[in-house]
Amino acid sequence: MPTDFTPFASLGGGILIGIASVLLMANFGRVMGATGILAGFLMPTNRDDWAWRASLLAGMVSAPALYWLVSGQSVVVQVPVSTIAMIIGGLIVGVGVTFGGGCTSGHGVCGIARLSPRSIVATVVFMIAAVATVYVTRHVIGGAI
Image (cartoon, rainbow, N blue to C red; front, side):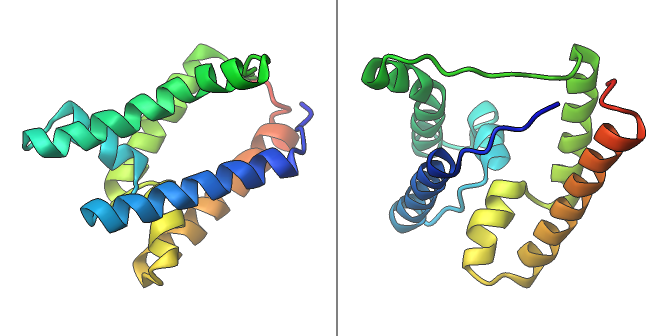
């Protein structure tokens, strides 16, 4: 299971995420945590809150189309696991987000930038779990999920 190394695309994406996080905090006083944004979109508390969440999600969804229009290349998404593995992984992530009080974008991008001890610990736990998962998937069970 090869992994492509794309430092410039990754750097560009990271810069855009950072800019979006700063703008969201500056304009709305909100942390850019993707799962929290989605949860507030699906279960809105007020109309104004729903509008910025809808706009941000629309941007996330439409970005590949914009990339295609600008570059002429389609975005290739490879999912090297079975559908059942994706469902199980999604459920595990949902449980983790609930017990961790946020997701990797909220804790990892915004929380660390604010020097939040809770977010730093959460991000370290996320990274340890990610390394362990990749190791087990690739070297113990051989990527057969």
